[in-house]
Amino acid sequence: MSDKKIKITKNGPYIVTGNVPLSEKIIVPVGKHYEYEEGKTLPQAETYALCRCGKTKTPPFCDGTHAKINFDGTEVASKDKFEDRLVRTVNGPALDLLDDGRCSLSRFCHREPGHAWNLTKQSDDPEKKKEAIRGASECPAGRIVAVEKNGEVYEDKLEQSIDILYDKEKGVIGPIYVKGGIPIEAADGEVYEIRNRAALCRCGQSDNKPFCDAMHLGRDEHERIFNKK
Ligand code: FES
Image 1 (cartoon, rainbow, N blue to C red):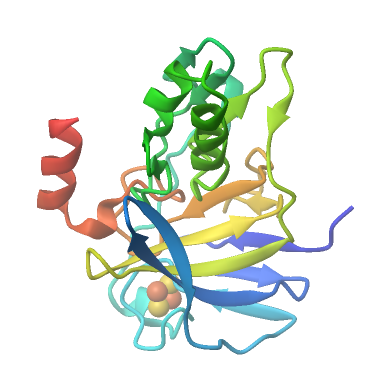
Image 2 (cartoon, helix red, strand yellow; image 1 turned 60 degrees about the horizontal axis):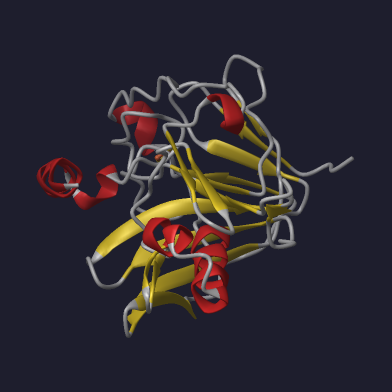
């Protein structure tokens, strides 16, 4: 049982305990897919507080600003299991793709030959299947999960750690990428479903707090992209 944990405080920061490794990663486009560049080195500690309101002067850490701006961090996200929250399932010829719609717009589902959804539909081609699995496995929000026809779920073995993401192409901050199944406890004490990949909001604007819904792109851009889809 892990002693690592993220505790969400009411209208305040994420309190991370258990010496969770912390790093900064920059999302960069490479051809038609995306990769991470290493960001600046962040201090490591047994316990630290990550900003949730988006207004700290010392990102990614909380500096107490949330109290001055009366940050409303009310959590509204479902605590149901991934399988019970699905909005779409693509049944390809050799692979299925489960989708809960919890998108951080980090774009790792974009691969050279296409998007994970289309690639799943073409999964009778082994190369496309491989790319679909990669696109799903690298989604930091855990929105999509690739599943073999025999029910085997594809998940990379991720070290329990946290990446603070930046989106170089869009010129904005990204979410907090929580890896390896670190428990996330709500302000009310209930624990969200433990997942290998989860993206927490750090701009303070998500409509699905505590999870990222890509609102860090700005409401107008967010509307434009999601309404276009
Ligand atoms: S949550 Fe404390 S400064 Fe943002």
